[in-house]
Image 1 (cartoon, rainbow, N blue to C red):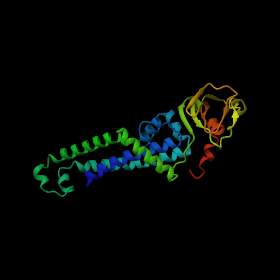
Image 2: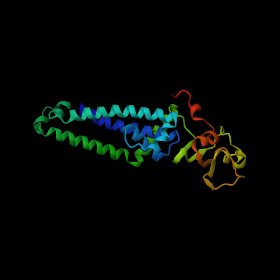
Image 3: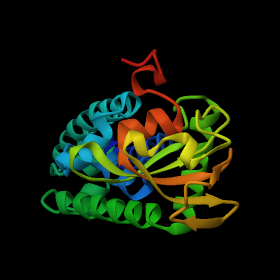
Image 4: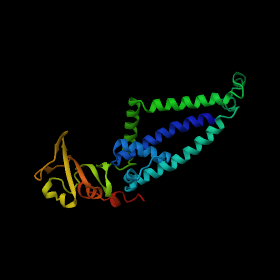
Length: 248
């Protein structure tokens, strides 16, 4: 039983990390960073101060991170306990209720048999979840369920690069709620809010370094550099503290 629980915990842990990564991605974290941050939260390692700011500065992401940390600690305790029991000399024979295994595998060999099974299970899990086809299907399924059940609020704001002093490069989709829709860049007064629009992506075509006469339309995606809080408020059209009031 311990051996099966150990293997099951590994598989569940990998799935939980993927769910966390998709949840971070839906809140606007760039996908490669989302995967790393989910693994960091779950394992309790790998954080860097600058990248951690992406998580702690956002209420919804803090909730996701807290859940991952709790599940990660529970999973670690389970893995340690089941691993310790799995390498006992008579564990395999007792677990699968096949007494003859104690004859085929002497007591002093059973821990090594269990260890081989554990290593094999970890290897199979790694190969399975790094398989591009399987990974894409799992990610798509998780994304659909999170959106369908409204567990994560999908954000139109994506942080691409964090610089010093809360400044960074972000990608923002202009929605019907955006306060700058149907305005030219000059009319939007983004420069006065210390925001520079680096490019406008419309229908798959990118317009780099747009001038002040460029009009911002719903459906456009703006790549901006500036203070991230100002970009969220002025371009995306929401404030983090009011974005999801029921989250604490």
